[in-house]
Image (cartoon, rainbow, N blue to C red; front, side, top):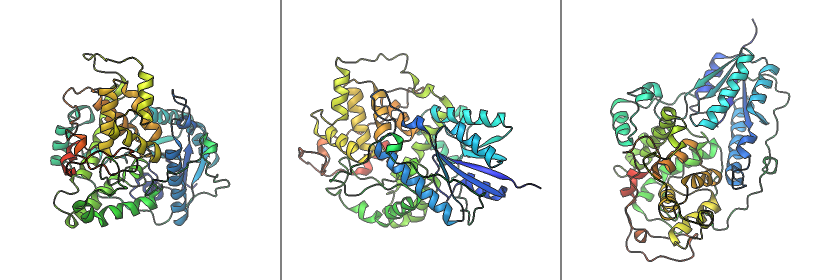
Length: 445
């Protein structure tokens, strides 16, 4: 009887822990062929002439893929890396290694699902199956108290029903060993130049640099809880984000270097080590992520395609100039400029900062919200399609649920203790802010 080979197509699930496609493949196949494709589609130029994926995010991705390869090697495997269309690469590898089936995690945003459909169609012609798994959410869709088509459009209703009627599944095991076919050419990781990008020059004001990969994700996860009491009772340091404290787990979550379930169960394990309700905002973050993914699954591209028909978009003259001033941090509004300087220099700002600059672009400058969303896509190292475009759509009032508008923070900016190297003009401080007041608006951290 011939050996059974399963190709595992990694995308935004760059980990070996709590990874269902990897564990299931190891259990059901004689040989497992792990593959990652650097798809040129994600590095093409956008309408502004910049790469769809900026250098900071691309570097984080390269580090994450390299770490995945190292972790697979540690259990006896390897990772095939290729640059090119997944349709061509997966098909070619499936034929070369006599693959019986291909596994991958299902995506929800239209660009990602379109690529999956193209791969599925190509494999179907080869009489091979592309098996879909669900591995990007906290709650498994089969455990929701309603079918996808009936998911409440209101986040408040979604949260209440899910927390009351559903349970988070435990994390699954980690393969101890993996058997791969004899790989003649695993492929080298591309450089930034090979992806059409420039090298990253790290900003001198950086207190820490985000390093991609599951290994660093686990270190950061441990750090979040080991410092929880200090952070809960202390004040933001000068080197902290201009917009307040953050767990800063989202870059690793976005690429699946750590699963939402693993973060959730770590919170559950460490709740006793911090003041009551201290981790509520982080759990809320995980729920918002689920909500946006399920909204994309329910509504598809309609979720962000057009503005509500009953609303008229009012724009001002010189929109391009206004947008340029916003993205370069040259609006003349110190808080907004500080946050944008930090985004451009580091590829990361916390959720509160994102809300501030997004609301300013949409409501004050009257600039098309999609320009801001596309700019975040390029710059953010923790870019996730559903969370990014979902957040921007909500702030702009673009969704099928009229009631589900963002509850934007009402604290005046002057009340924030602005201690940031990314702002040239120091704003006066009136008093400290209880950041827990903002927990109900957290969607990305």
